[in-house]
Image 1 (cartoon, rainbow, N blue to C red):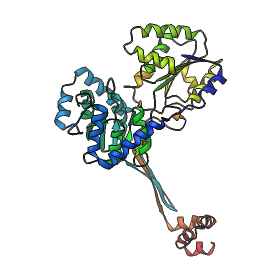
Image 2 (cartoon, rainbow, N blue to C red):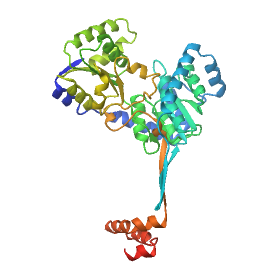
Image 3 (cartoon, helix red, strand yellow):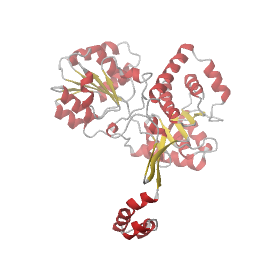
Length: 429
């Protein structure tokens, strides 16, 4: 892991983090895939899937019998774990206020009406294993928001099947459909619609660089909740932190391909103990090769003088996950401005948040926590402003509004307003 000494060195290093995928060649390839699917629909999906995934499918949707059979045969312990995750995530999001309001007075009624989106797609990556937890973290908030049609897109396995655990989760959630589609072609099908895949209103979930680029390119045709990049965790630790816990938290992120594990510490003596703990754990970790590459290529250790400087560095980095492994961590919560998720204290480990704590683990990456949030109920709702003015309301604000309209050179606006003014208000315009 590279070492940065001092607040200024860290702030300079983290100032220009990039959140998007900047690869012109990949962008061009994705654009061609999107255009092909838009033009040829299912035929393009079949050909692209066979070329890129090595699987030729006669149907993209997993049929009801296959879904039910896979769900019924799932290991009981794994099924119970999925149930626990669904229950915890649902309970958390049900606490989020999601009601509109109507305010009535002498001037009439003003308010907001909340309406759920009609159809949402959850993209679920599948590499060495299918990220079933990502489906739960995306679909449950959508259900709490009131979305009735939720579909899933996930890459097929080598034999064309879908992970039974994912099918179990989809069945337990009562989702509309599961499609064996991955990559940029899946995003194209969901954004534009094909003969067998209906277009959706919004796409959520993490994915590969190809998927994220596709999401960026279809935005506007369809809503995109976020453009997730490689995962990242920043641990702020002082001399009271347990080196084994720090090492475990850094490795829990590092075992993701392309991850960014970062340690910011006020205790220079902590790092040698953490480094030793990392090496001990790597010796028996099945994902050691990936974890070591993440640590060596994208990991960092930052040494600062005090915790205020540590939190300033953390805010500049704006990490997906910010872990406070310090004495009295709650006293530093108020200093956190930019983070996708905040994990307070030794027992609030980020890895547990990935599965069952409650908040969605689909969080902003690449510094986008400066302006965006983790997936939540609001991502699946529209806010409709409502205006129901009385004559008194028109008379109270009409003259001012007409004056503003004329100042902008919009005479028809001004006349439309003045046509509604009552006699007394009209005399004062």
